Each structure stands twice: as C-alpha cells, then as structure tokens.
Length: 174
Image 1 (cartoon, rainbow, N blue to C red):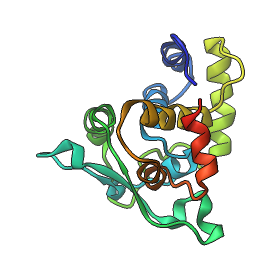
Image 2: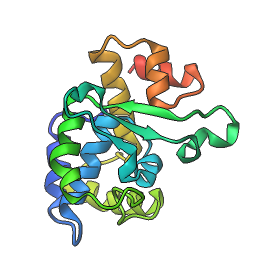
Image 3: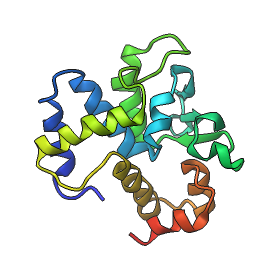
C-alpha cells in the first residue's frame, strides 16, 4: 500500500527525471486511481477513453480483452474501468489537452512495462522509498475500491479484470 507521504515523494522524484517529468506524474496518478495493470495502461489508446461530459461518473476506460494479461487463459472479456471523480479529473485536465489521434497511445513514451519498471526504480530511489514497484499502485487502487465503495466483489472483479476470486479477495484483506 501507498503509505503516508510516499505519493508526494514519488511526485517530487519525477521532477528529477531527465525526460517526461509531467508524464511520469500522470502515469503514476493514473495507475493509483485506475487499478489497471501497467501493460494495459501502456496499450491504452485515445479512443479507449470514453468521457461523459454531462455525467462524469459514466466515464470509463475501455480495455479490450487482447490488451489483458488473462487473454491467453481464454477467460478475459472486454471490460470497462469506471472512472472515479479523481481519475476523471486527471484524464480531463492532464491527459486530454495533449490528445492525439484516436489510434495513438495515451502514454507513447514507454514501449512496454519492463521499461517503465526499470525507470520507476530510479524514481523510487530518488524518493528514498524501498521495496515499491509500479504494480503496487494496482494493489492500492483495488484496496481503495474495497474500502471506499459499495461495489460487490464481482463488480470489482469486472473492473479489475480478475478471473480468480481468490486472487481478488487478497485485496479485501489488506
């Protein structure tokens, strides 16, 4: 879990990166608010962001099954990651102003999760945070859903893409 001022330290450490300082902040915030896997986020295209201006709670990120880790198991379905208020604000205020063509990736600077993970280790080192990786943001976001919403386990599983309930329920116990 993200503890105390760790998120603020990570944001500060992004300012020490050589390139893409704001993009690092945006992808970190996106991860902690969306509960998406980093690989899914990196494959996200502008067309996958569905924004409902009149009813922000109706906004979501479309995640096609072919972008999901569980696609090989045959259990993956296309899914919609609903946007909580903070995620909607991040998308509208930080991401959409630099919107590209519908088929372009939202975060085009990183080809795959290995590159993000390697650079993120630099960020955590600069933030003086040990034993923390990009996937931990997914844990944080899923735990937040259990603690702060009235969503059922099945509804959370549909949002997060978990196909095994035992895996998902570990978050409920954190």
